[in-house]
Image 1 (cartoon, one colour):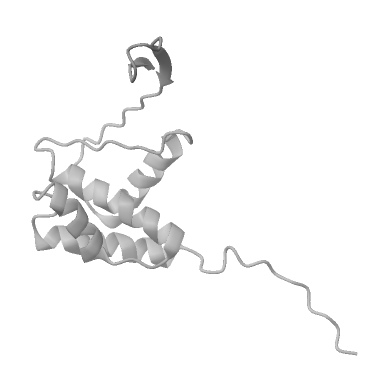
Image 2 (tube, rainbow, N blue to C red):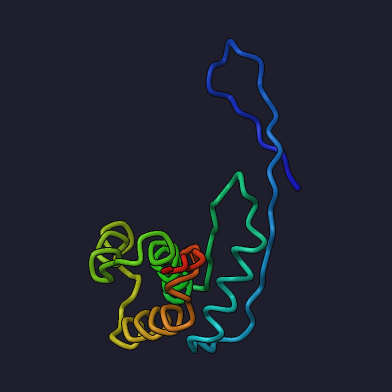
Length: 136
């Protein structure tokens, strides 16, 4: 846990805000869809509700961390909307950081993870079952 000072206006007294920091280390470089989904679920489970931010870091700052960042965004969009366009999301991130998703293999990985996540979701999980009325 660490504290940060909010110094927006010099006339106003500094306000201390409490921040939570959770560090998850990934030692393997295996990027297969089941392990990516498992890691994303672990990250979301440990993410505080009031701060939905996650920082992904890797050695060069774009390769694995960029893949995980975009994968996280795509999975969140898929959970909320069930409809997404991968090239559009990747293009928006590439406008900020051109080094992310540099290979076709990483694009394929994005699609494999999304397909696995889509196949594992129950489409009818939010539908309420109503009792049948008798037809007499």
